[in-house]
Amino acid sequence: MKAHLLYVEDDQSLAFVTRDNLELEGYEVTHCPDGNSALEAIQKQQFDLCILDVMLPGVDGFTIATELRKRDRQTPIIFLTAKSLKEDKITGLKLGGDDYIVKPFSIEELILKVDIFLRRRIVTGPSNGSLYAFGNFEFDYGNLQLKTKDGDELTLTQREADLLKMFLDHPNQVLKRSHILEKLWGEDDYFLGR
Image (cartoon, rainbow, N blue to C red):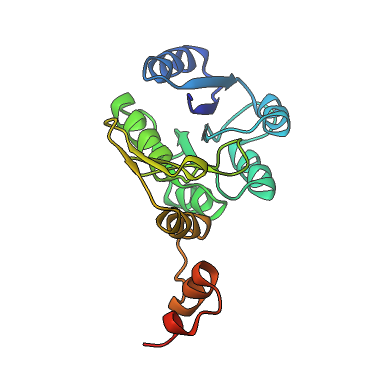
C-alpha cells in the first residue's frame, strides 16, 4: 500500500518537480496550491505525511498545521519553506511540525526524511486494527506474522503476538511488568511473583 502524502506548495514549477520525484519513489501525492484547498483536503482525507509551505495564498502553512493537529496528533508534518528565521522554525516545530526544511533544498534529503518519518510511524491498518508497520517490519496480528521489508517472515506464537501488539498499541510508553503479566497471563500468581 502506497503512503499518501499531502503536499502544499504555491510555486507550480517547484511543486511539479517535487511531486514528480516523490511519485517516482512510490508515494501517492495530493498537491494543493493554496492553504484553503489544503484545509479542504485534510477534512476529506487521511494522509500519512504532510509537506507544507508556510507562505501561501489564503491560509498559511502554520494555520494548516494547527488545524491538522486539532484532529490528528500522529501524522508527521514537514515544513518546506523559504522562511529561514530561527523564530519561524521554532514556531513551526511548536505548532506540531516534525521537521523544518529551508528552501532551496535537496530533493534527496526531502525523500530520505519522508521515508524515515513513514518508517518510524506506526500505522494501524484497516482490518480491525491488526496490521502494523514499524521500522523495517510489518506485523499482521490476526495471522501472527512478522515480516521484514526484505521479505523474511516469522510466525509468532499467540503470546509473542499479544506482547508485540501490546507494545505497538502503547508507543513511547513504559509498561509495568505487572501490567504486562496481568494482561497476558491473567491473575496467575505464578507469574506475578519473582
